[in-house]
Amino acid sequence: MASRWYRTCRPGSVTANERTKILIRGLPCSHLGLIFLGYYSVGEVGSRDEGWAIAVEPLMHRTWTRRTLAAMPPAAAVLLLIGVAVGAAVLVPQVQHLAAATATPSISKPAGGAIARSAAAILRVAGMDNFQALSPALVTVTVPLPNGGPPQIGSGFIWDSGGHIVTSAHLVQGARSVTVRLHDGLQASAMVRASDPQSNLAVLYISEVPAPLAVLPLGDIDSVAVGDPVVLLDVSDGQKVHRGTIRAVGELLPIGVAMVDGAKYSIPDVIATDLSVGETASGAPVLNERGEVIGVDLPLEVNGESYAVPISLVQRVIPALISRGVYEHPWLGLSGQTVTPKLAKALGLSVTQGVLILTVLPDSPAAAAGLRPSQAMIKFGDELLRVGGDVILGMNGQPVRDVNDLVTSIARYGTAGEPVTLEIIRDGQFKTVTVVLGARPSIPILD
Image (cartoon, rainbow, N blue to C red):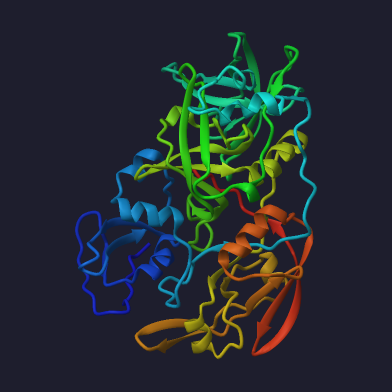
């Protein structure tokens, strides 16, 4: 694909070298998410004094690991991971794929003998070091390599008394069976029951279950807050307790290969912590101070921040993998931009929040429902703005303030094949549109 470059809000310059196709200078911080949610990789970042110099290039088939992210300039890497489409200028038309939400689902809790809260509450003790109360629910996962090399080793935790174990999809990728080691040293062969590369979650199954199996209690994403203490329990190489605090929660994590219309899918509700862990901790549970699972470690670390798949997504994906062998991520098939007061003024909108539809994919649920994308661009001051598309204001009676609202509601409550009602503005008129959600195309988020 040919390189593209865009004028920024201030005069800029364009340079090139062997790896960098474009250098954009003078891009305001509020617009950086638009680049990083798009179809581009990052080359370099200049200083704030110079007004942010960003080098980007088209990204065809690339996935992210701790190594590739750590190699990026820190500012670029952080923005890549937590950037959301904010600000008024639309520098790339493909910003973020979206879907919609349905009514609140019933969450399937794991069955079996959960570790008593009195035991789990041991994490409240200063130091959070008493591992023995929780270790019965943890397993070490060993994955043989087909070429006979050193096996891959990671962590996992017991989901239910029926012998199901949660771990990372990338850890068991390509394997049919693995070896798990329980806390008492017992080793058993486990079948890879199913995996979901889009959330990096997988389910293992032990057919001969040693009784009884301990199960960690599950937490609630709505109770997670910045500054809360957290613990990651890693048994990939002995027994390690990593302690830290939550730095961010409720963010979108745009990672994975850009395959559809140039935009990347996101993990919503992602939890960012200051935990410093190695790649072998992938699949390990992240617990709150009450000993409840609030996330599953992702092999991503940038500038001292680690990330976890949120329990809100784990609770949807894992039961589906156990019962059906697949989880269909709900999907609308469009990209959108958060409406800001400046954008609303430029578009002549009577509202100052919502999601402006930028593109609608052919043969997508959004296209079938007749949702309209932006049709033109206008110059507003020094900025080029997309205009003419539907603006999503609400979903199933709940307000949609921004892209994060929409994507998070999709992941928490949406169901592929089920209808949702969107409240929109079209040509200045308020309307409702019914959309039957589809299943999102499968895209792995990690290599």
